[in-house]
Amino acid sequence: MEKAKHIGIVAVSAEGAALCFLTICIEGAAGFGRHAHPEITMHGYPLADHMRFIEKNNWEEVEKLVLASAKKLQGAGADFLICPDNTEHQAIDMVRDRSPLPWLHIAEEVAAVAAQRGFRRVLLLGTRYLMEGPVYPPKLRAKGIEHVVPDAEVRQRINDAIFDELVYGRFEPATRSYFVQVIEDHKQRGCDAVVLGCTEIPLLITEQDSPLPTLDSTRILARAALRAAMPRSSPLA
Image (cartoon, rainbow, N blue to C red):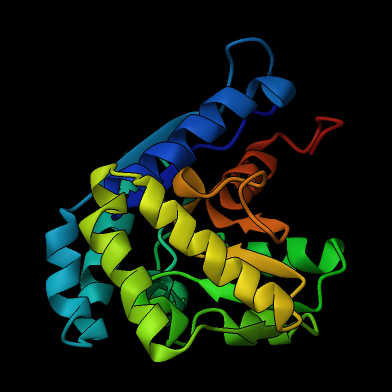
């Protein structure tokens, strides 16, 4: 009988990686049976190791960290890789053709779900590096979806909240209110959904909180990994 594929998780920030891992474990039961999920191995260097290069726009060094994690996960028996960190995908885009294992790409999965749900103009929230960077625009454009980012002052405030609060597991009511107001402002400007493009944001903003429908990048990636891990003989694959 064909085995489920072994998922390798390249962790960067702890809260986002933990949410992705938990989603795979909890939601895996629907396809794999009670208390069951695919085999999972996670590897992560400290967030500080990544950030000292990201802050200098030195993506070649971030590439090296990504590839080192990928090789460790290959050695542990993983069949494919995911990274529950949106910003890190700038480096993943640079190494996919040299990676020892295939990747599921978080922005590709989010764009696919956005297209399935019929969204046409989405607000992109995440770190400053993500909102100003190249990860999402081509993936959304390929699906015919326009994206919008907040202005520079708002981008910086969101970035500060991510790195000073969310990655430490702090989810303050005032910060939640600020994010909700940003989303409401962009709803008024014609956005029809919001990409929660930092894997910690879904821990701050739920579908019920948001004035716009949410595209929860963390759980979208986790669910894609579950589908990819499913044996092809399964009716749910």
